[in-house]
Length: 409
Image 1 (cartoon, rainbow, N blue to C red):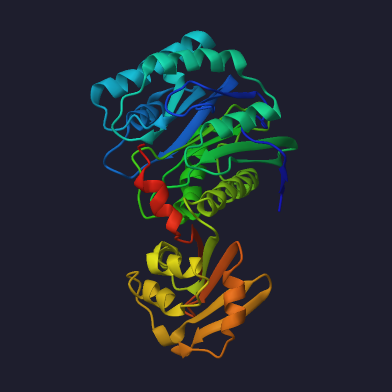
Image 2 (image 1 turned 90 degrees about the vertical axis):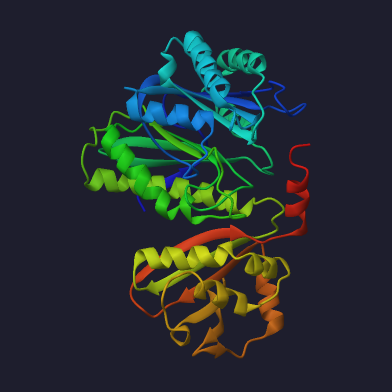
């Protein structure tokens, strides 16, 4: 492992500043807008929702990624998603970016905009603009400023999510810092989330794009809370080059070191999001090993963590392994059900639950104890090849319905 985790978030890398502020968009007495800013222009890349219904900020950000020479700032609001808001919604993105650009001295098409919250409502643009002005004044390179930004983008999240790592590339220390939000409407296929990754690595846009698009297949696209893919899913990565490593323009040792560190960051945040699912009491992990293809391993693992019946069994600490077999069976992957083994995992211990086409002799009490922990892991050995994949979800509790029944109010 060439990287090491450090204490930090989006302000960890050289040249990045952040802030959070109260704008009064929906919530009272809490910060609901954030800024991330780089003192130097950044090459950028991103992935976005697969939902045909895309929020105005997604449309705006996709255009910047595809057509702008560089990006330098992100403005995010919570409470209102600015989705299904027509021309007015897109105009509000422009006004937000324009005001931020004026204050920061950069073009409006160098300013990303992010929104999360209720679909269909129009943004209170005067409050948004006032929030931008406060954010620009408050932004700082401090550790605390990064944390405040990560807290300001939360909606139903119960914890803020941030992480940072350092990796040596070409004799230079490269830092990657990131924050994300996500708790409900989380599903593989570019899950429901906002995520922002800031790095000082010197890398070409082509290679940065390649890195992030490959990475999400095994990180953010391998989590699910409730099977709903949002209108606002956005993951952006900005690289300002201030680490001054030799520019990465092709695959090789430097690129591999970067992607390894990047995958730690995205996987860390993905697991935090899955474990913080609305109403969740446990992170539920499914590891599939020895599958015939990588894609089939992904499909099988995701099918298990997406199963509502399995998620309910995890909440009840019930070793109802039949639900896992059922989820594997309807995944669409062809396999011999008598050829796979199923285990519950507790640290280094594996409890053999199913094999040779039938349930095994195990202790229900011990299985319940394993399933009562905050991190529950099911291991499926397909005995078909050498490929593997891991997916993360959460249990399904009574509180999920309570939270979402009155979300608008």
